[in-house]
Length: 565
Image: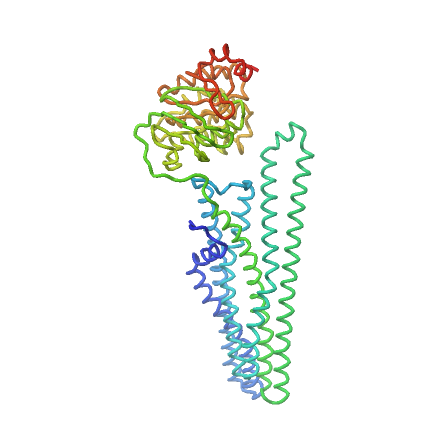
């Protein structure tokens, strides 16, 4: 993984450097291909001077064999070089995607901050592909440079003025090409940014399609995506126009340069400074030079777009982690005592809370934002701005995020299911100790869901479990959290989409399934709260009431309104 706040240049160097061996091999073969191709017009010129002009059949046969050998070598080198070059590009792209995936999946988080999931996907696909293409572009650049060098040497042997014309004319031409590529680089970055945003909006809308249809907001959603898509299209067209102008300008410059070479060669032939065969060779080399110059044009464009994409990748890789990684170790076994002291974060204001090990408590938050911020802190998705959260006397911020999350599992209300069978989803986080998932399925009443499916628990679920109803998805997600059997389980509104009878069954079975395990229910469900040892009420980001459910219902009007409304 790239460390130390990588820049776009750093990303490019890493992508190219990682394919050094392939690039060197492909470049050597590419140089051989370009060299042989450059020598073809030279050999034809020799054939004219030494065989055609003299009428020597032996010389003609000999040089035709040399020409055939050149074509064999150049075609063989081209095929092998092309295969290795494409491989280097794909391997570089793949390496970048792995690096991006490692950053996105880093337990400390941070990569997704301020970015839609679809935008990250676009960066890991389109941008990674463009940066990977620069590895291939290096091979093309080296091959083109070899072709130009061999052509210059050949022309120097034919005529010093022609050789010097190339040697002195190519550097300014390349410098002009670099200047012309700058607008393309800028517009490519905007294009990729708009395309990534459009992908993110599309993914966001598709994920909430059912909700949008349910509230009749399809028109607003379509209008939103149309505006985003049109912005992306406009940026893409600007980048395409810039690429066309870039390629056209470079082609015009090279065309003029090649025409000058041809005119100088013709003038030298008319003065008798070079022979007819040498004139043919010079004109052939001038025409051949169009290929290397076109390659350099392509390379310029690829590097311009690659630099823009590398900058976007670098922004993701340089994103600071959302939480720190500590080195402390929890005592074993984990008892499950959770203590919050003066915790301030978002809607939480100096929150103090002590959860005894093995207890089942309810948390009622009058402000949904406070409930969400509490879950973020307990799950170490974010660290408190002030205060400390301790597990068995060890601050969560002193733990590695993975260790903290294995000990404190937060099951969010909107937890997604995955493609695979129902049982695969439930067993996803189960300890590898041969334990059966039946108890967790029964506690969440997800065994009823399995019985109603065509293949029972082995029935494949579609993406995000959309083949199930909302209540069925909730029960399967709850079963998955219970099957993980963490020392501390924090569950947020696990029964909002199930009927009251099923909710009562779940409430009764939760306590039976987790004896001696700490369980925190962040909910306003009276059925669930009635089963807890105590209920803590949050108001204004701090604890406003604490007691048994029945006591609070009787004595606290605000609590009664919140829970029983």
